[in-house]
Image: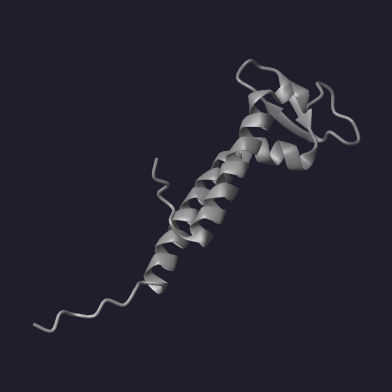
Length: 99
């Protein structure tokens, strides 16, 4: 399988985008493992789910569960931008044929 990111900066940013998606899948996939049903001093970020349940998270985790899809989308866009920019900056010089 050919990896579409050929430059090292593109590969690194794509790897980081994959890590951010994995973090979102872990936290949003099983929110009851990260939350409590009643707020306390530490779990102050409340999210109401479709089932009607209110869960309270630590603020960074709750924010990432609510907004992580935008973070992942931005990370993918950034990795594509870095890949294209790196390819354009480091284009090999091709000499024209002198027929």
